[in-house]
Length: 115
Image (tube, rainbow, N blue to C red; front, side, top):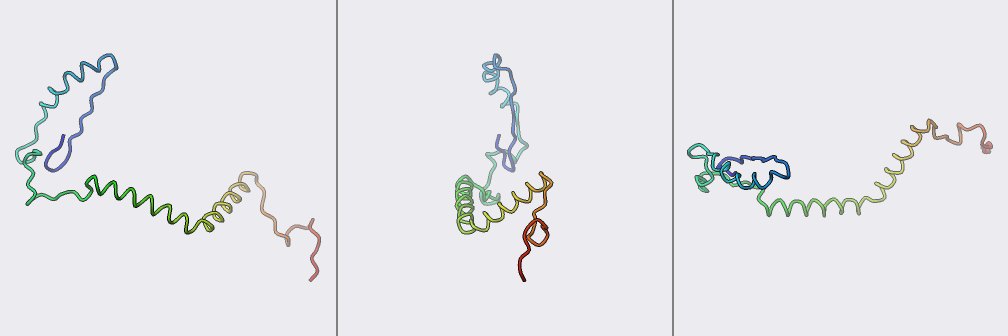
């Protein structure tokens, strides 16, 4: 239920066999709720009250722009992201298996390189 300064959320919980009874009695329950004087939805005064900046159009436009921006960043930096993912997976795999990544200088089984 909408009020002048907020929202009152009511939930009706029932079993499926009793759902029709809940739907039948729901208007009576909603009539029980009353806001204090001056805080009803009908008391809204656009000259005095602030209008929320997150109206439906703003929410939809924001979600679309966020998705487009996310994919634009992915396309721009896909090489860096791919290298980072490969490095992370390699590090994670070495932690799981307990093996360290060997360099040519540290591995005695590799042939010596002439200087």
